[in-house]
Length: 284
Image (cartoon, rainbow, N blue to C red; front, side):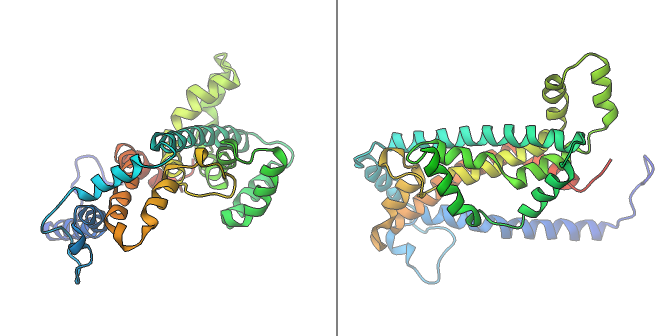
């Protein structure tokens, strides 16, 4: 580690080269977002122009106006679709963070029978995708009588191997001496968990919040819900954009609408995500 006040051994040319490289990478990563916004502002003739342009020559808001008209003409109010999506996203995200945090705490800080085996199962389950559990999940939801209810969409999202693994890794970095000091001061387990452990792993559960919001906000048609009144906003928007070439402009507007919420949350929490990625492999 360099001493305080000592200048790092990096030339001006090297600093400029690194800065130019980062600018190039940033431009490369932001281009798809700019292209999506540009498409939503293009008239129909520019949408099918070849080669495609990054930004419209004659921008228009007709795509968003048409989307509003189509949404207002739905036989189920669009506010109902929006409420379903917001409720599922908020409830699923809060439940997910609570469940994986309370599961990860004893797995990281206590030793009990089969604790090592459970940790190995969590690590092995990271190799499997959600499609593997599709049929068992459907059978469980059916047996519990949760078909055509919000619970069929919320409960399965609360348990996640990735979430438990990430929270366990971060909680294992908290010094045991800190928790022991809290016990000596008279704190019970709930106080230790809420006032010491959770603030210490704030960057981890904020990262999980972003991943969970992104997944639930974009949740479209599922095999658990058949009632139109319980469908989500992405499902309704997918039905609107399924009209073929005539609705390509509306489809571009839908893409922008659906990416606004995840991007907004990411902007406010980006520092915590960077901290999570930087410290996820560190040990005490």
